[in-house]
Length: 114
Length: 109
Image 1 (cartoon, chains in turn cyan, green):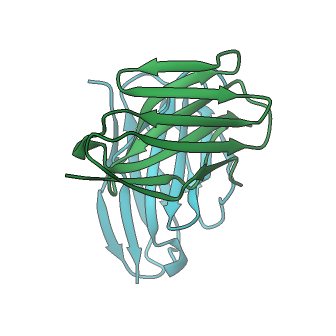
Image 2 (image 1 turned 60 degrees about the horizontal axis):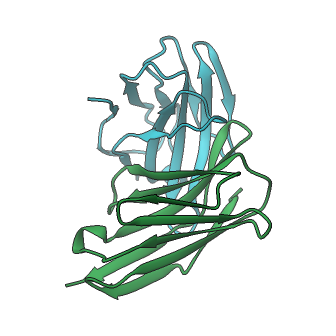
């Protein structure tokens, strides 16, 4: 089954404690991306990756890091989380973002930073 | 930055009625996509319409696109309780999908 898997689904952490949210896709997609979703603000892109070892900033990259060492994995790293990073996070993948292809989304990670 | 803006923000309808929501966007597009999000869960792709298409159907979904007005509409016919969700239009540009704020649809039994 084609899917994007995020872990964990729910996470409560304290300010400053480094965390990683994992994302894995099984569709051999080149393109992967992280979004955060906040009430009234919709989905905003954090980082994206066009392929292995190719990553770039999205609209709201501050406070986040990513890496793409393997095609299937695209972890999101919060080195020093702060309460304003409390949000619902989604990982997405697709073949190419500009073509007529759909994006597949993970189930989301609800992060609370206290 | 948001590329698409959905209207209305929220919609409540009776089961069996049709639901119509609109999306306006700002820049030229290759295609426009609609996604559904059930409460707190991941987005699911519903339908894609290319810039050279004016209308597209998929099951109970009908999408129109007017590139001259930079707008699209999504019609869900004969709604069911399971259609209760948020619906987003999205346009691919600059290596990302840009989403609107979404329309929340509630289907009452």
